[in-house]
Length: 123
Image (cartoon, rainbow, N blue to C red; front, side, top):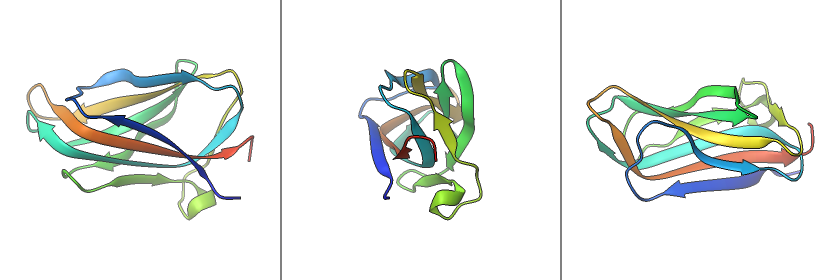
């Protein structure tokens, strides 16, 4: 079974927010990977990363650190060749993707994309 991508994008400047994207999932799934990339930084941040939030609690924290514009950051579970444990999200959960911007003065990230790689159900 191949992972299914959930894609989140923003073209405008986004500062640290909790969460930037949020949805209620009708079916359970397992997060097996994350990828993120921003094309432009404002306020000179040193890096940015994301948290995956399940019903208000961080289930993946500070994942996929990204330090240079245009260079992707990744988080991989064992299912896709990484070392992290996969994370199961139950049906009906409110899932959020939060942005953490580190360093700088009033830092922002623009033209960003986050891909959450998932497998259906609990794997």
